[in-house]
Each structure stands twice: as C-alpha cells, then as structure tokens.
Length: 365
Image (cartoon, rainbow, N blue to C red):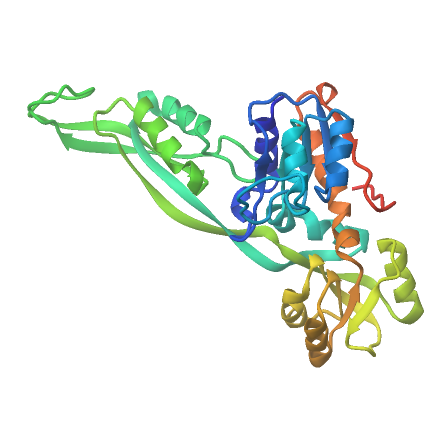
C-alpha cells in the first residue's frame, strides 16, 4: 500500500469536506506515492512521537492533531513549533492528520460510548456539501460513463461506492451541417433513446469528473451539468445522549473518574441533582456550552474550557466535568486504528503500532 491509499481510507471514514475552514487536516509531510509497510498512530505529532516513529522505522504516522497548524515560512530544528515537522521530513516519515473531520465523524461518539450513553445524536450537526452530476448519454454508453465518473471520484455515499440513479427517456437535437456526429445526419433532426444518470460527488472532484465524462462520452457536445446539494446526517460536533438510570453525587463523580481515568475538575453550575441527559464534546468544548444547554443537558463533559466559559456555564445553570483535552480525545485514536485496519484489503502487509504517549488509557473501541 501507499500513502495515498491511507488518504483514501481517511476520506472514506471522515471526509475532508467535514474539516473546519481554519483546520489543517490531510497529508502534512511526505510523498503520496511512498510505500507503507509500517504504520503508527498517535493523538499528538510531538517531537517525541515523531522520534519514536523514526526509531521504529515507520513509513507513515496518522495523528489526530495536525503536524502543521499554521502557515510557516521555514522548518528549523531549533524552532520548537516546527521541530516535529522538521524531524518528520528529515527522517522520511509521512504524516497524515485527521483533525476536525475526524471530530465531526467519530470522536464524540467514542467518548459517548466510554460513558455508556444511549440514544445519542450529534450535539451540533454539520452539513456536508455535495454536487450531483446529471448527464444524458445513449444507452449503449451508459455503463462507460458511469465507470469513468466512478474512477474520477464520484459515486460515494458514506461507506457505499459506485452509487447512481438512472432514468430512461428520449433526447432530441438538430445536427449541424458541418459536423461529424456520432448519431444522426448533418442537417437533420434526430431523436435518440438516452439514459439520464445522476451521480453524487464531492465538490473538489468536479473538474476530474467533468473531464472523465467528456472523454468517455460519444457525443461531440455532451449534455451534463452539476447541482449543489447539502446533506445533514450523522456527522456533527459533540454528542447528546442519556443514561437509563440517573446518577448523582459521589456515584456520579466516581463513575466519571473511573471511565475517563482522571479525577477531572468541575466547572459551571456548582450544585445540581440527578443527571440523566449528558452532552459531551471531547477536546476544547467551551464554544458549545449554549448548544449543550439548549439541548437540555443535565451535565456537560468536555476536555477543557476557559474561565469565562466556566462563568457562562454557571450563569445558565449547566454543570461541567472537565476531564482533559488528551483524556477525552485519546479513545478515538483506538477507534481510528480499528477503522483503518478494517479498511486494509490485506492487513498482514501493514504492521500497525501505537506510539507511547503520556497515558495508560486503553479502550476497546
């Protein structure tokens, strides 16, 4: 397998279109065509994890947090901000980061499962932008057009590939006198049995799909167009769910500490009773306090909030359990590893290694 194959796997699990505008997900360092026989996973691409990967002779490291977060003008080994990227490049290590796209796809679901929440839905759903290709083609070439579009990056809906809709009808046109048509006689009007194909694609694949359709279409002037679509489904930031049996007091505190492997901190509302409905957002969750409140949460579990966000939570009467950025996001690394391994056609050809990070947290996800 090659680095680009793992980029395709990440795209199928957590499409890059889900990433927020300020984010930097995707290939951070390396050659997309480089072979991968040894793969590592980590939450953070620190100098320590990069050196571990280099010493273990890994070809590729997949992390949650980006290796390069902000634009940089130079890579210097003396610069603590860019040192990890310098080390990765110097050691020939490719790095792929799946950040806010993975947040929107799976991170909160993992934390919700750790907390035994049921009836979960996204706390803040996100819409994903799509295009729909509509193309008219003689029925004799319908399969060729489909295959060309699929190869160029169209036809994927979730985990399903090569998706399409087909209708039948008749197309009519007058053939120009100075043309050499695939069908029809110059100067005459023609009617042809045609198929109408509709195929979904991500916006970034528009040009490649258009070129592929033109190349495979038998007409001199093929008729096709793209429509914009927005889909809101299971993707979103955070999660809201419930416990079948409400928890309170010391039992609640012990449950959270045991499940999250940390005593944590409490913020927001200081006194509260039984908790049944719980909102979660791994990592930095201060910006979603009002979403949690509006969703009717009795408790909000997140990684970190600042002082003013804690005051806001207190103002609206929402207790917050602050478990740590690392502790709330790390379970999703195991989920990502499992999803990637399951997507490898021949798992035996790639050795997978978890890098030693600053925790003993292990979850069977």
